[in-house]
Amino acid sequence: MLRLATRTLLCLTLVAAARAGAQQDAGDSPRPIPLDEAVRQAQANSPQTVQARGAALVANANFKSAVAAFLPSVTLGEYAGKSAGSVYIQGVLINSTSDWNFSKGYNANLTIFDGGSRFLQYREAKASSDAAAQAAVVQAYAIALQVKQQYFAVLAAREAEAAAEQQLTEANAQLEVTEAKLAGGSASRADSLNSAVTVGQARLAVLKAQGALVTANTSLTRLVGGDHELTAVVADTAGIPAIGVDSASLLRMALEGPAVQQATRQAAANRSAWWMSLTRYLPSIGMGYSWNNNFANPNFILGGGSRAATHSTSLYISYSLFDNLRREANVVTADANADAANATLRDARLAARENLAQYLATFRTAAQTIDLQRLQIEAATENVAAKDAQYRAGAVGLVDVLTAQTALAQARQALIQARLDARTAKAQIEALIGKNLD
Image (cartoon, rainbow, N blue to C red; front, side):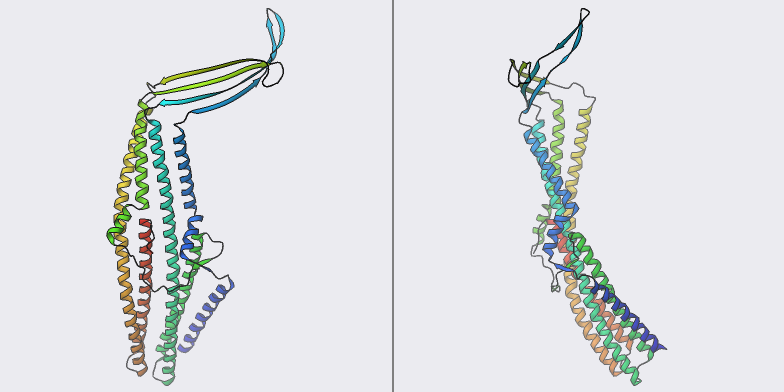
């Protein structure tokens, strides 16, 4: 009965693996894409980066408008009209029709003094444009970080699949030994069943790793915006990612990173907006010039008939004595926004320090873990070989062998996780400083 249960478990596992393989073969195989290309396409296709670039274009247009505010405004116009009708004059109905009246002219106005409002508006628009451009950079690095994390998740899933397949190979070999010992009468049916369970667990680990790889590939494809399923390029992933920059230099770069630069420019824009709100308490002075040419003609003929030309020059000053406290409200709002922007800038600098310390600690811990896990895998491999030899000789039980194999599998998984942590921490540092460390 135990042997029948063993065979049944193996058959079910084989069927599940065959179905998964058939489903994978039925679809198109994922197309490998280099990491740099994946980042570039994601930054071009991501809705967040598209919106950020659009906001930067709008802010730049507003800046150009602020520059043009120093120039006079000019309007051109041309008019043609004719009137007809009847009126009573001393009780007599008289029909009248006028000639065609034509006029054309232009007007120009220039603000001479506005309390510095235009200059401050120019400074605010320039800082806002810079902040929007920097926000686009921040969003681009945020998308790059997401792509790298998902790309590394694909690599980790592929490594997990390879480790599970190695675990399955070892479990199958152990099952053969157990079946041989059972046939020779030196092993129990419980040993055979336990070996079969180990094989089933190894096959299940392979299926889970394959499922994780498929999920990671689809997530990567969505981030990149590809029409075909994508995957990471097959490469040697055993190396440790290196950071060839000292901690002090990294801190300086972090304090000048995209997020801090964006907060700096936004704070500058809010300071200019506060100063600009004060200019509403000052008068404005301007001048204007207009020229008009009028003429009439019985027929609709441009340029004919009697003419009358006029032109005028004006100088004006205006001051709002009371505007229902809107100036005061604008000053309070601008002051609150400036304080909030300064607090955001201070927090951005502190966050840069905090995040850099966290990412560096994670990277260094992961790097040390990688070295340690390599030694543990080597030791666990030797232990499995020793326990297997002792089991073949009858010196130890099957439980000792299975325990050694479990320890080896756990060491492999810990190494995979350490590699993923190191890659992710490096990517987080790159997003923080706004530079690649390759």
